Length: 308
Image 1: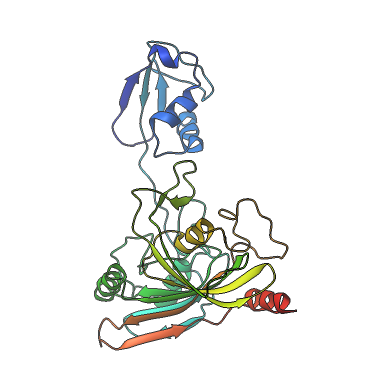
Image 2: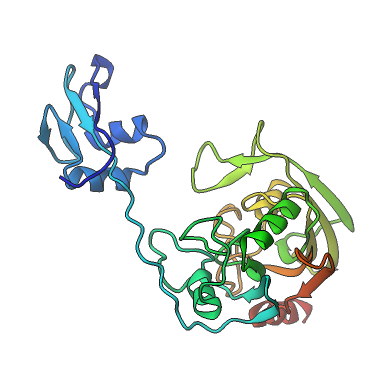
């Protein structure tokens, strides 16, 4: 048996008679996916009446389920010689233009090829350690299929300063996006709370009791079926622009999660969203620094097609 946390147990009651064990555990242990629980069952971390069983076994009234969540084993995160598009760099901070399809920090299934792997190679040991070994230097992130500016902190002083600026909403973050449909108003403020979607744990949603979230939307150009917009973040919630634009009936073109199954007639490789402008007060000098990440080629090409 692999080492892990303490063993816990519970007794099956009559109402769950005949339920599959893996389905029952998924309902009881809501922080874990069914596939993860099936794996630990196969590895012997779940026992039914003291014996290891298959995930598909049906439980009976009075059965005793004993389980143990194994300790996470964090693999070594290795530096990788991945080219970086550097927008700004000094002894304290690094601003890079992240390409499409690159994950910011390692996570299960993505322990290589991430921005962190590239930054470790570029910076060596000169990165803040506040967010631990999986996220050295990382103080904020953008989605895998979102391109554009990400700031990396090279020491803890810089990390604390940038984190506070994010908390105080004083960092300038202006995104470019193409959304479905035509926005009538030139300027819109979307002020809707965002939290985990109760129907789908992989998504965020506008929910009562969610975190305060504000997005300022400015129309740059209108097309027949789409609108090119600039979105300025006042807050920085997970998937904020994607959720807010979908909530007003204008999901981002190509968004696989929030476009409601609407297929993009163009090759977009995910949502058309680019973190163009990033501005912050330098942690050491107090000077205001602003960087601009040029539109990626696919985005500029798509605008050209829409303008035809």
